[in-house]
Image: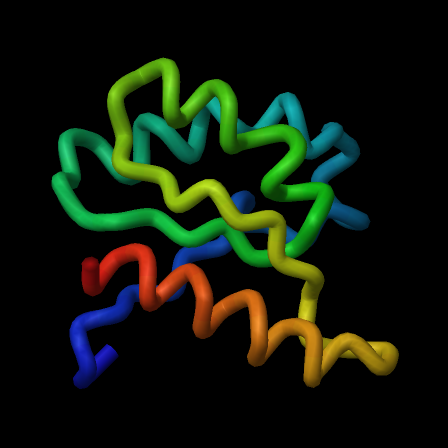
Length: 91
């Protein structure tokens, strides 16, 4: 956060406790982020799949990179694709 990045979960409640699908959480996310003008990088492939199109259509500056969550052997892939997303922002 000290570098100007603000991590935000799709849901404020863990999904296994929520009893809702990821798609059901997108509207709540839009309410929470309000009118931010920041770049948005979606982390986790299924979060990208359910959020990118709707956030983009609403006018948010969402970076078009589908990034795997950095676990289960995906750490190197995460670093590579996340770096590509940052490069897009810095252009």
